[in-house]
Image (cartoon, rainbow, N blue to C red; front, side, top):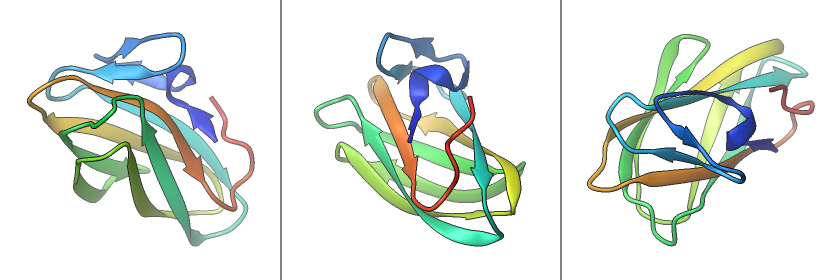
Length: 113
């Protein structure tokens, strides 16, 4: 899995074990090495007890999904191409800070930072 604090963050505050999103547009980008063109099950884990925020996911520059977080995890599917991919999580709206701990993408090679 990829730790959020090791990913490229824009606007977010990096902590020792997580990243905090506070403002619309804050984002974290992970680099993922996929073994083949496929859709991979993925899980995001949030550090907040209960996180509330609207996020968008952008994969390799293309919008992929918009979702609202209302628990400590979010399950999704990421469609990746073989090789290096970028996956960006962008805060679209929140009534308080949201803290992302890590992403786990099942079936991929080790996540790059």
